[in-house]
Image (cartoon, rainbow, N blue to C red):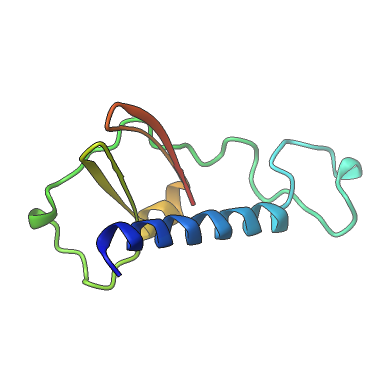
Length: 107
């Protein structure tokens, strides 16, 4: 499998996991307990986890990630980015511009 095929595979897997989690997650809006379906709860208030609005990047040769580190990789018009899943686990969303195109990376 070539690198572009791997990027598509990783992005497809991330999209599927994101969609599955969206169906499994409790409501994301602030609600009274009486408004929530039975068995659901709201563990964090709305917007408790802030997205990254201005990410910074290092050259791949300067990064000491393990070879098996999971990333969401994106390449648009020769401009490439790798968003480490370990970081996305804590922040969940990154707003970025790649190849001149706006991009929301979500985990």
